[in-house]
Image (tube, rainbow, N blue to C red; front, top):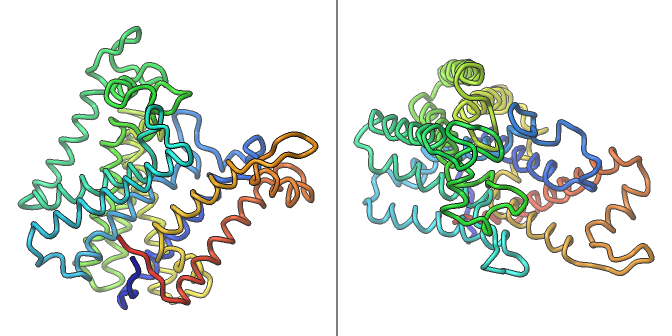
Length: 375
């Protein structure tokens, strides 16, 4: 549905969200997957590239926004039954939209992939909301989150994977993959893998990514002074980055595919630092002109993210006969456009940037018409 824009939105948070969405499009939809610059690809296994920042930033931002959303809407004083209905409705809508993209256009329920980006966001949103709603105090929240991380370690180190054993953190041998196959079924995860990168066990520390964002969001509510907010955020960010790097070296490697706790913590620190910088530039110093298009995109995040995925999938399944054989409309647009004007690598990047520019324009039009889609 559409809604009026609240007057007290945090422009830096909208901007950070918009940049994250634009970055997701940039890395997800190149002109040619055979010609992509290495920083725009995920790390093959352990380690990270700038591309590995993007998804945890989505969850981090969701956590930051939660206290602001509840404050604006007055949810803090609402009865719990109404809040639970709202939480469940949002969760189902998010999960359903993601499931639609997974199945589109054939919707083969027997082989359709169940996990996905929006599905993980939905599960993390519900889990974080439940932790907040059911906890009596902050201590209970941390205990609940700690319990989920202990469960992750218990599964990854304690479950015996046939032919591999316990505590094997390879693509084929880790216990998370076994749980994906048992719970979801091999036919409902990525077909080329023995696990799903948005699967069952790896979702547990993904909740931590949102939970860390929640702590940054609470600083916004508690402190009204710019400097107090920045000081707290810088302290949180530095601590998380240090902890993530130590955990990477001593406990468990940073790994996006497994969404290891070290990965969640390190990305939370990087996300917190970038949010702090964005906040200082935009909300403290007032330099907003450069960020307006990203902020407008960030005000309609779900609509733009989902619609961009739907459009790309539609272009990819639309086949056209050519002299060189059958080509997708997506490929033809690339080959007849930037692919015909530039060498392969810059052409592939330019095509991805053109797609981002189109959706920035969509965000601008929606903002000018005061269309703000909420669930």
